[in-house]
Length: 225
Image (tube, rainbow, N blue to C red):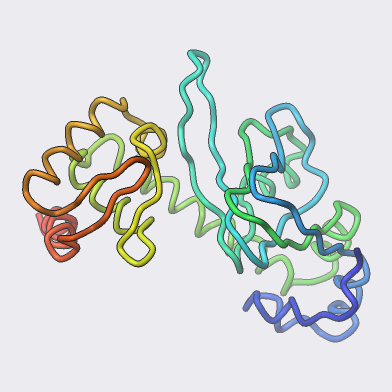
């Protein structure tokens, strides 16, 4: 389905400065798609043919090791682009990770021809692409630093705060362990300790944050050391 107008461009600060002719070229050469939750958007070995700009929903990007262990890399939220897709398009490389729609997703797909044309013609478009790329690379280095140096209780507390909606986290211990790159048993032990302290209440597939302030203090205390 083609986008009838270019209103979606307003969701991306870096694209608002495009001149009218290039804005028109971007809209005409792109497609707005809707995908149901659970859709695999890309997979290892596939070629990157479209830059993804998310309008609604979230996309989870993860990688699987040779032993079959899944490692969470990052999420793409509304108003963001997928850095892995950007990297693969720039380097003409195939994907080395999975992209999964966590929710129903609405997104703009910019085909390679349009991407290459605008990247060659527009400094504004290039700046948008590389700024988004730079921010996400910084996030990935932070993830590596967290895995190597950060205590698990601090990392788990931070992730619970990030995922909570109205103080409810709908995720299993297995999902949380995948996101944090650790064993499910480690997450279960840490959550049991949080519950013992009165910070959380656990139900099947759901964690209620009853001590949000304490979890927040734990994450901030680690940053002050």
